[in-house]
Image (cartoon, rainbow, N blue to C red; front, side, top):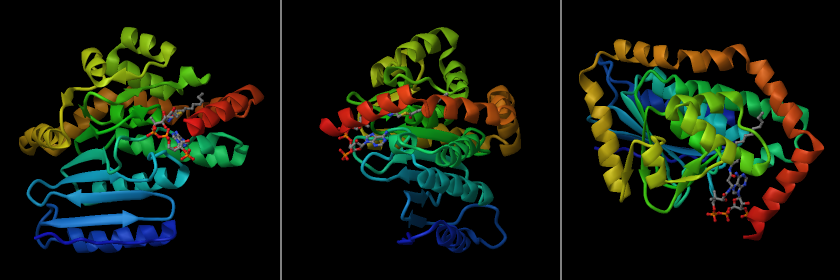
Length: 302
Ligand SMILES: CC/C=C\CC/C=C/CC(=O)SCCNC(=O)CCNC(=O)[C@H](O)C(C)(C)COP(=O)(O)OP(=O)(O)OC[C@H]1O[C@@H](n2cnc3c(N)ncnc32)[C@H](O)[C@@H]1OP(=O)(O)O
């Protein structure tokens, strides 16, 4: 049986309460630690849109990003992603498939409108939220797959790299950290994550040129794990990847993952303020503001 919930919620507080309300209904399974049977939750808010579906047999949650037009990551959307991850942790999800509910775009990365004409205060709020959401995603206790069903530049690539397995729909879309192409640099924790994923040699080549990889190029360098020809195939492969963990004790799995990711995670945790200062110094400079303005114009002219 499938139950659907449709919410139109205007603020974060209500959004949060509604998640709790829905989750209570969804996850209250007497005498069981497992996720509930046949439940679908769909959330929406004024600042971001996220759809959550839980597979009743496996306990795997599919989280669909659907903030039109391009899933660009602004403060509210990042906050909603973090709240969703918190709920999945609390309810002991068995796995995550992170994908897009929009055609052609996984996510367009950071919302450039959060960077352009920003104040130090607004940039601080935005960047602190980005750090927090990323730390949650990078350290989930459940296994995670990015089903990249569209373009994934910049922070879109970063979100995908933080999942444990990446499946990309080919051949039309691209993925990569393209910051240098925009005249800015990737933050050190994006760089760390790319080095963890590709190794230093390929990461240096990719980052210095701001390369956006096609799916087959991404497969070749190890930026993705599988390339698929359809979303259905992608979902099947994601489910197959996650199913291998059904028999692996969860705590052993989680501790092993965290051991491997610890250096990258603690580098950000210890240096959050330094990271923020780097961002403020770079992004608020007149030269970068001018470049961001031109970049936005070029996107709008297309
Ligand atoms: C020390 C470190 C300091 C700072 C580090 C900063 C780190 C930044 C990391 C990032 O993530 S930067 C952003 C990287 N992303 C991009 O460069 C993507 C730019 N967008 C595109 O390439 C394309 O839009 C697309 C391939 C994603 C989609 O193409 P298409 O389907 O043809 O749509 P449009 O280009 O027509 O876009 C529709 C609409 O959306 C606006 N838009 C696109 N991307 C963004 C974005 N990232 N932020 C805000 N808005 C975006 C675009 O302007 C269009 O707006 P309209 O008003 O014309 O509808």
